[in-house]
Length: 315
Image (cartoon, rainbow, N blue to C red; front, side, top):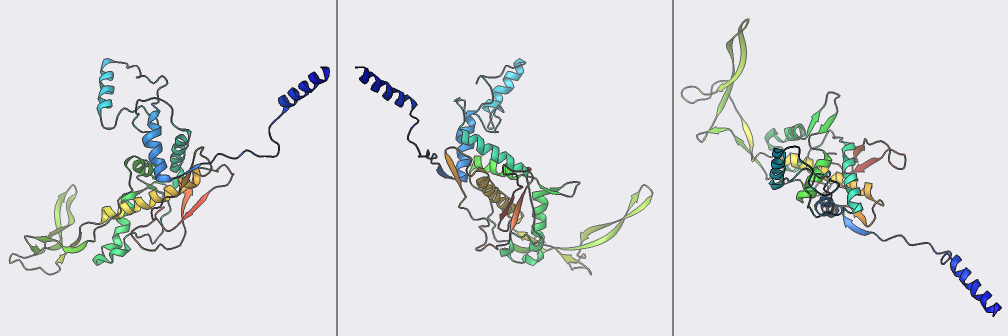
């Protein structure tokens, strides 16, 4: 019997000390491939609303009776109460957002570290033609709407890449880039072309008469154009909003590429996939010259500053 007990004891000791099959590495968990637009919508519409931003999940104590009324009005408004740190309306169901959704939001926040580089020849409306000379001015007018130049001379976006990504993650779709082909028309009045003339007129000033150049009617009393009179032309419909939309589209589309690169290999259950949308859908072929989104967030995890290249676009 002693031999049997010894063998049993040896088997038990072997079982207790067994560390599993040797020489076989654990397989990494397979991640589900998911388009970046779908992933953003999933994060901001389904997961992040679960986080209310309050520890106990109960309404915060109000300091006054009127503050309770204001909070109740907020909850009935379209925007909802401002008690979610992700900027979305909480769904009141409780629970915690998926870890991948939190990482997606962190990557979206890091978009604030990107600035833009505008090429000298940026023109998202070349297919519209000359438009009687108006076409050459459209890119500059669009940039004045898209950007603001600080005292340091650096051009910055009025609506950041982060704001554009957040907006369309909530609303879906993309910035509106469609432009109805405009026509050049002459400024008219009562069905007849209108003439203009610039004249110098004198007005009383603090220190005496002051001259101002003003625009007046360029026709005489018989309706004939006076010497030096000119006509003014305009585009109908005005394509400026569409050109601005194309600029925002390029910024938004390039930001999606940045997010895919930033999130690749960092999520638990998903692997981001690049958007299938064209970078410049209003033209058939894209020039291959490099464009960059410059990363101002310091050094990444690898210790190197990233410089992300994309095709020609306003980024």
